Image (cartoon, rainbow, N blue to C red; front, side, top):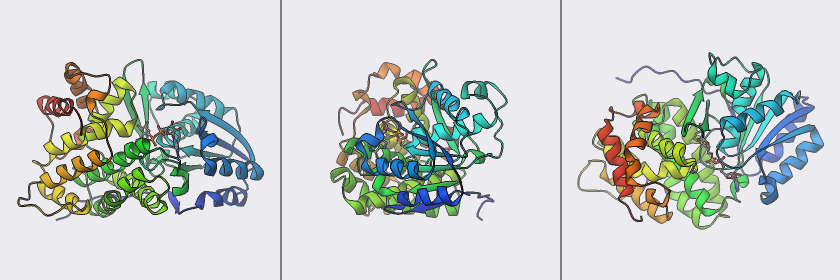
Length: 386
Ligand SMILES: NC(=O)c1ccc[n+]([C@@H]2O[C@H](COP(=O)([O-])OP(=O)(O)OC[C@H]3O[C@@H](n4cnc5c(N)ncnc54)[C@H](O)[C@@H]3O)[C@@H](O)[C@H]2O)c1
């Protein structure tokens, strides 16, 4: 029998090549005259589609533009966004960028409504009221699915950890998902963000809270990623591959929100907390190693993931086809290995403790032991190259 589940995913998604150009019409149609835009620092300078969007928005409304500094969002950078938003008197928040920008916008909107910054919010009771102004997410990477999720993740460099907040009221009101905004992503970023989407889709299928609705969305995301990620990596201007990757990333975000992430995200976030390395890179460094453990728990589900990835048929249905397909994909993407970061096998214990302290690993199909987590890190460290 199918287990009970609830779904509530209210983000209005507008998807397609060029849809960002219709955002100014939404702004004027809603009668918003003052818009707070949060965007990646310097992104407009090398992304003509983002520059054009900002120009059109400036014709439509008065803009307060806040540039998020490079790197994954920290509690301090979110505090700075809160201060800027609080002083803007804006009627709507528009986030244009990757997961870092969208997450910062979600936290800033909720905190400012409550008259606090993120530092104060995290130290308090952590309530998430119904938002008093709308937010529009405009992703420029094809990876996190943050445009449809109710999560936001921040690094605390002082403690060397990444910590998330999540609530339905953090979600954007609209998502304008325009693959053209991703054409400027360089190959390595395409690989990192695309692998993050793949990891979310697979996790949505194997998590202990998976549902048939989430599975349906996740398997199609896996299929699209299997046929388009390497193409987009090799040819950044392939419009079909970019389109399929963008759609897959939003679908993986939806699937992950209906279900959850699993151990790969906890091990990845442990690496990210210690090194500050890009999120998708950290998840990809341990994706095959965590799936190697999960295939013993849910072989039949990983067989279906292997089919969605287009893996050739195998002799035994033990999930190893999925692990092999993921390893091949990482190889095709020239994906780095764990020892390329400034970490050594001596860090395995510390990484394992951080991963076990994280939430996502509790959503894996069966409880991970400390030894299993450390073995996954050791296995990732043992790779000299893909
Ligand atoms: N909220 C969620 O549901 C969720 C899910 C997964 C990850 N995350 C978080 O999202 C963050 C990672 O987001 P990300 O992977 O999208 O990367 P990112 O937002 O950190 O961006 C990485 C870099 O890419 C640049 N960039 C963005 N778009 C570009 C483009 N089109 N062309 C060229 N450069 C571009 C940015 O300027 C930035 O320097 C992490 O903090 C992670 O923890 C959130």
